[in-house]
Image 1 (cartoon, rainbow, N blue to C red):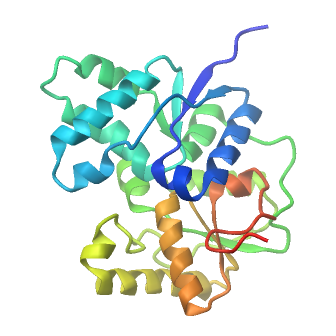
Image 2 (tube, rainbow, N blue to C red):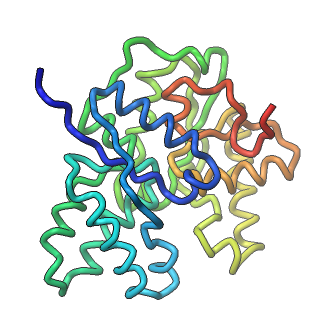
Length: 255
């Protein structure tokens, strides 16, 4: 029997600290696709430091990640934001560094989860999940995943292949939800207007579930829905593809 290819899972800070079920669902999906999954020692990818003008600190964090993940056939990230940081910006950070060849080699193996499942693996489950029966979902295209990695159609195709619910495209799906890391702290009024628009666009297509590929964006949208008293389930697409929709959604209290 041929040896299974090894996938290194980069968990991301928001998943690790706030929604670990996304990592668990990701492992399940990758194992179903036939891979051996490992989670090596890791910390932040450095995106926060990078966006706040600290390239040296970012390089320090980036090099730690490169060393931890260099032995894997593929590196999968359940986040377009962190995936884009690693794949696109790490080579830029090491452009004049002797370590660039290894950095580029590792970054070439980095994939956002839905892109990996659809574009690399051609993933299809043994049977469609039943968790979305009689449900209407819509998808938010997060900024970094869309603009840096071209992630838009991949999650929609996977939903159509793997689930049995109704999927509707909401207006302005490609518009930012207003989180933007420190953007929501620096410009709270603008951020609040943006997430309000995102919530209203989801409701405009009568969606009762909003899905996305970045926990940070989903936390922002779920928080706004909860404060507005709106009944809208917000979930990471990995959880839905794994048929884990009976557990509390993001922002909901555990029973």
